[in-house]
Length: 259
Length: 259
DNA sequence: TGCTTGAGCTCGCGA
DNA sequence: TCGCGAGGTCAAGCA
Image (cartoon, rainbow over all chains, first blue to last red; front, side):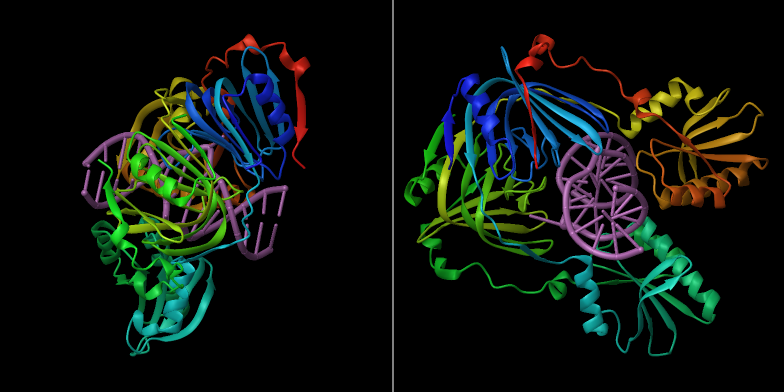
């Protein structure tokens, strides 16, 4: 840690901010503050104890004691301002869109400065594209004897995810969605209509998704469309587990229930 | 701050976690760690310096040095586990959906515990509902001599935001969207068709939004639908600005450009 | 509890 | 730079 200041006065806090409120540094501030935002919308947050974080790309987060999401934020700040009077006012502005966050500190409990070094990229599997690749590798996930014709086939209504033929040579339009909704159904319907225009015959439409609700299923049935559930277990690529030098530690562990 | 531990060893860190890894406490950890996630998807994040936050509602955030969003997280953790070996392994699980985040610390630079008190609610204006209320109060924002008939009118295609008549007694279907897209256009079209079924005559469809793109505008025109831009300034309610005991401080201030 | 929808969405990709 | 779509979306509101 570059700096750890407990209960700094505003002079010290101001000075520290002036020095480290640029890129390269991560600044964390625990303190009592109120926050105003104006830009795409407008918000006001009265005094409360919060954790303010300025990241190294000038992202600003104001986290309350609860929730995944911050109460206020700014994805990328263009310019900072520090004003020290009876209270300490930190202003973060950005230009596009034009917006501003003002944080007025009445008390600072802790201010830390650090330079986080993190070159690792998050490797993640289970996105929509991974479903695509899975069914491309193994079309039988969707249906036995399914043959691929084309991927990303263009129609006037947009791009069809997968275009195929089944074992009876029917054309099959496949739409892949991780989180399907009503619009997905309408879109699939439009694709089927387009293909029907082009080829006539018995055109099948299949929605491939890892989960489904009864309501969407009924929308599909109303339109003579089909649903095939894909198991995400089949889709997710396996990574090496965390270094397993930790194995056998379970004896030392204790579980805590949170309420 | 309840505790501020610089460079604690794993014994001390483990002990602190066991004591404070329950609700009511906010725990912040700066350290070198790697993170595995498995649940709705699967991810692996190699070693790097990060800020780990456990909030008072048991939300877990793993923030890297950049970005608004955390690299890994868990919205609400049901059970925690701490294992101390060569490294310190923190496991957070939740039941629905079933998923797990494992954080393996190789070094802890700072660990702090606090209890944030924040009873203030965020007051925010500029949501879609605020646009609704504005045009309900002052229909002339959309068009002169527009008369309001009904809000949330049900049709087989869904609920119409605002149903009205213009000065020539034409029926007007209004769809309000903060962030309009192609689906918005299709939806409006379906509403107009439904109303046309019911009433016949000249049915107008208006999309009311604070912003618009050329593409969506052309979709609208293709379907003989209209667009009215609403100024968010007219929509946003004014709150009291931050306490202005700070006025006149600008002389002391300095601006910093972030690269 | 499950489903639907908006979000100051954010973020990444592609034109 | 803008537009589009996905997200481990989250979170609120309502049935």
